[in-house]
Length: 368
Image (cartoon, rainbow, N blue to C red; front, side, top):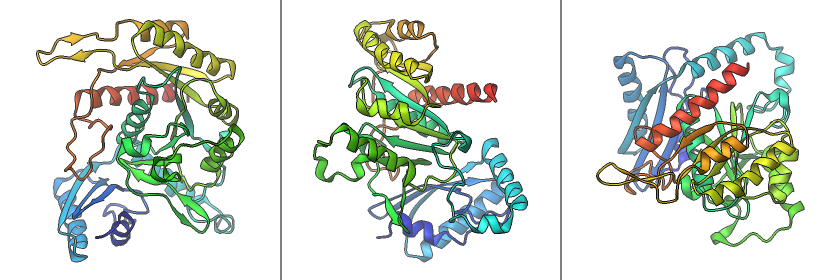
């Protein structure tokens, strides 16, 4: 059976017809999943004509079938305006670059470190006052929604004691190391790093704070993230050592606070918001999770009460970004792109996450 890396290698020579550049180099081969005998992937296309997209799909399918892969599912997605402008920016930069200076950088590495404010990466930390409110679910779905809108997204599972993101997003691969640099795992267009990749058989992490801080710094400095627009950080609940380390490492980070509608949960979440404000992190919004349950008749049942999210947003002088219903994604394990916790874009809850992502990108567009 082929691996994800082998599938990408097979597609190295497939070129985007409009620019003549390799699809792999453009990062237009996304969401490659190999499960049993099935292969699923997404292709970003610059050409909007159905005939051209069909030709591209045919070439990819033929390439994979010639390698012995028979069950291939290909999704063609039109490139967003952001993706188109990013390619133009790269072309302009390459044309203006000094070839001597360019040669001095390792392939794919950034001139500026990820944590350098001049890198242009926007950091958004997802925080909560307590566990069990769905903070990680919000983190992975926000990351996936931003990627669907054409943003280049990284996701760090900084909840080192309670790591769960690899399982939630349906990752079965582990990071590889090339020339001493860790290559993040990619899923749904999101590049991912987690402590879960380095702990065997779900063993508990019993490190002390300084060791955890060093691991976080490695996630930032020793991983080949490439060019990113957003880095989403799934913080541990509360205001402990790891959360404090993140606040100190990334003074330019913004935060989203997650709570449930229960008044007590919102009261506890306010502590996480207060910590963000005390460390000069801007709280850009509150997400109220498990807001209600939609019954079979379509009626909303507010099983955990009402008003907690709005109350928290008012306390932190920010906006309530969304109220997300109680539920789980209607995903089937037999699907090649199955994940336990990522909502599909066309689902009702997926549309809510798409709206949160749109609010965030609009906010940042206004500030530029």
